[in-house]
Image (cartoon, rainbow, N blue to C red):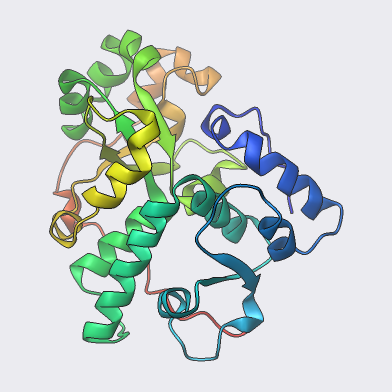
Length: 259
């Protein structure tokens, strides 16, 4: 497993649980075994990838067995950490995926609910912004959101969720972009997982209420963004051109090859 900078601001909430597990894996412990030793309450067990029968959908296997096939490496490591931090929301996403698979089968093209659930699982970031900040972000008014309203970020809560985004951030680069999901101001952090599990409805997911944000643009998270010119790069901080519902950044990945 590559070295993880546990001092990175996007890993602040995950450090206490994740760093000791990463140390065990680095010392030679098989990843599923190290993950199962965590004291964090988790509604699933992590098993080697070889436990997934050939041809069975990954989400369906998790739903029917309560076991998560886990490969060595960062992608499945961060997926497991998300199960530890958001057990109810992860279980809800799995239920939605399994329900859609049972209804429509696994095809080359996902329906809108499965597509959005995959985007959320892989790439979501939770944010609790003011109305002004959320409006600027969703309308891609980057200078206003990240320069003019910069002081707001000191009290704007952010929570990592998407494990693919975290995998990329181990070796950060400017264009890493996450999909923001808004958390209302009246949701307490202690209630976040329960709130999110209820908020993840098929109807809301199908509408894809995501808003993109280049991760390294978060004020205070990357030295270069202290210069307002950092945000002038239109290849990264893009103007709004089409609704988020038109974005389909992930391929159909529910059937994993046998180990």
